[in-house]
Length: 373
Image 1 (cartoon, rainbow, N blue to C red):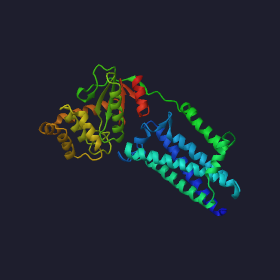
Image 2: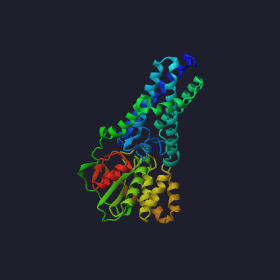
Image 3: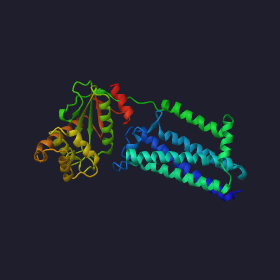
Image 4: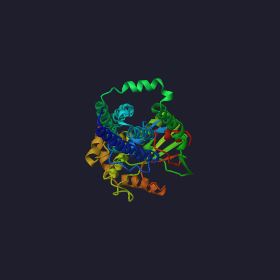
């Protein structure tokens, strides 16, 4: 039998790790439900950015935010380890076995979401990474605990599966899982996605995508150094492709750079990137050029802007004249002034048929708003 002191030590570790998991999961849920209002919480760069994960297509399962499931997971783990704390040392084997089983589940989820983060979304969420570390630590602690007990844990779980309806170790987490799926969408109803006020917004033929006669026009005020603008822009282009003939996209410049925008922020290259994108639009290559800008959005010195123009086969002499002409500055200032009149506070800012979109910046939510303007 494992020494009581060792058991208590393992229990204390699992208690601490489960508490960290619950608190971190609650914060992740708050970020998800904030619909972007807390988007600067960890928006360090396009690679280290919470928003890229929390508002991606992988952020919800069955319309329930993933952090809600993790809150249930760590809460149940906390419940089980507290049960182990109260039991006699000889009776701690079953709680330890279930904690071991749960640690394997946590490890599987960690590998899945870490792989999505690294290879699909190509971004890291610091708060999610903390949960990955918690799950790995839980796996190690439960492994050491079961190794000290010296008994196989699988047979206990198999025994309880045969009598699942009688085993609280199985039906309680099952009931909690069903509660999350059924109740949470009702507890967090979707807010109205569009404002009641409708604005008149100037169109831009050279920075539009889709048919002019499309019944739905989506105007995006964006910044080429804004990581989330990159994600939302990809969503919008996907939706335009899906709903071709029904949706038209219009891009507006709103660089968060004080060199051209009085309300700008710390994006040092955003204004020059906007100038360059405007110059590319004069040669009808705005969308291709904007994709290149987003691909290198953290570092966009002038030499890179000219390199993109060369890569797309633009007339470099025309591009250079435009970059040094006051026309590009006037056009960007015009969009910025319009953004100020619309009381835009950050990017991306979306208007669907002139109505401000204020819902969660997820693909499904934007699709819903576009389908029901």
